[in-house]
Structure formats: C-alpha cells, structure tokens
Image (tube, rainbow, N blue to C red; front, side, top):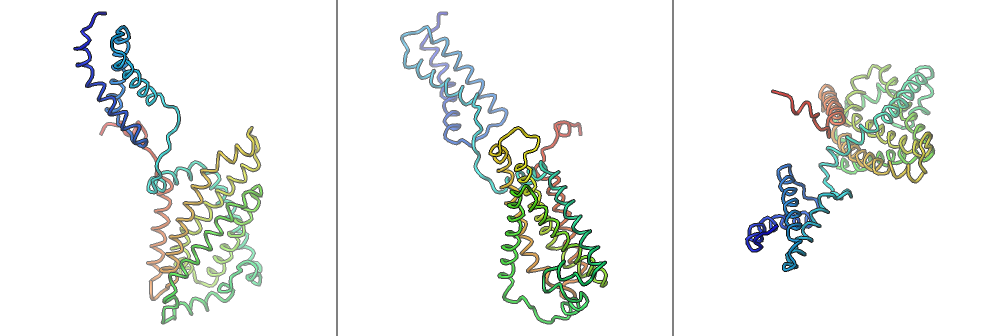
Length: 338
C-alpha cells in the first residue's frame, strides 16, 4: 500500500496524543474509572493506533515513530487486557454502606443460626427462672439485677438528680470497651470449632430470657422495653453478628465437605471476618453512646413511649440497612418502562 507518510503522520498524530493522554491518566491514577463513552473512545483509539502501527511496518525510514507507536499500543493493550484486580482506595462510607451489609447478607445462614442459638438460650433462661426464682443469682450475674424489679423501677423513677452527671463519657467509654471485648471474644472462640461461640450466644440468651421473665412477671414490661430497646436494638444485634462471624470461623476450622487446607479456608473468610467484627465495633460504639446518654433515664425524665418509639425506629432502620443497603438494582427493574 502506497501512502503519503508526512500526511499520514500529521493526520494520525492527534489521535496518538489523545490515546497517550488517556494512558497517562490511567497509569498515574490507578483508581480512575471510565464511563461507557470514555471506554469506547479509548478502545477506538487503541484499535486505530494498532492499525497505524501495521501500516508503518513497511517504512524503514520512520523507526522512531514506529517505536513510539509500539510502546503506545503495548501500553494500551496492557490496560485493556489487565487481569489483575487493582487495589482500591479505602472509602469508609462505601465500606460501611456497601461492603458491610453485603458481607452480612452473604453469610446470612450463619446469622440465622446465631439467632436460633440465642433464642434457645432465651427460652431456657425464661423457663429456668419461672420454675426456680432462687436461681436468679446464677442466671443474671449482675448485682443491679439481683433485687426486686419493682424496687429498682421505683428507685429509678424517683431519682431527682442525674446520677451520671459528669460521668456519662466515662460510662459510655466503659460500655463500648466492654461490649467490643465481648464481641471479639465471641468471634475468637470460633477457633474452638465454634463450641465457645455457641456457649457465649446461649449464655447471652439465658441471661436475656431470665431478665425478660423477671420484669414481665413483676409488671414492669414498659420499663424493661424502654430500658433495653434503645441500646439493645444495636447491642444485641451486634453480638448476634459477632456470633455469625464466630460460627463462620468455626466452620472454617471444621472444614467438613470442603477440599481445602485449613490455611486456604482461613484465607477465604479472613476478609469477611474483619468486615463483620469492624461493623460490630461501630454498632457497639453507638449502643454505648445511647445507653449512657438515653437508656439510663426513665420516666418522668423521658417518657417510656418516647424511649420505646426511638428503639423501634432504630431497629427498623437497622433491619432496612442490612436488607437493602449495598444492593444493586436488577437490570429488568432499571430497564422497565415508566
């Protein structure tokens, strides 16, 4: 093919420069993403440059131009056919709103099992206290729960001064630290082939069930709901998710029905465990804040209906978050006619 080399270069060079600018952006900003129109343009420029390189192959008089095009086409080919997954810059909002709920849903069966184990404990604890009220000291190992619920409610409702005045921040920090330690322990006990995780979940359910029965029998259901629901909607959910993570770890330790080594199984779930326990920690930070600054104040300071409404709102929002957040719309839905 006979071509006017000077005219050919003058016509095609702007396209080469445009391709080079795109490649510089892609190479300097590894997190850069292109939309469909930009991607199509990039592919067109690559194909044009490759075609120009083939046409220049017959001209020995332009080695510099040929080497320049070879480099350009090679770089473009590498970007188009890149098979390695590029690392992405950590975005806390994307992690919390997308990665965390997606990870939770991916292992929902483990969460359901965590809930089931806890509910068995709730039923056991409730029946145990109903059958033997003297077992309260064993079932509820906290001093402030040992007395008569009616006496405690009367004392809480008659308090004229703020007993947490000047101590809210310290109390909140203590709650956050303690609950996060419990959650991490619940996860870590998965290395016992999940036996330790199951024990923590069951014992948590036993304590919760005995508290419910104790206060309901004493006619203090409103107090109990207003006390537990605002912070418990997050705190109890967080412990259940920590149990979910512990059960995942236990399953990896057991490895039944999986043709992988222990190292491979652990590697396959390690990222998900970190995501789950990190999300749990954030939930417990919020729970500690709410318990210190809101849950500990009772009627007449804060009406029970307001506390219960706030707790229901939190729980509904939490369910909606884990159910919906991070989901991509289905293609059929996005393409549906209005």
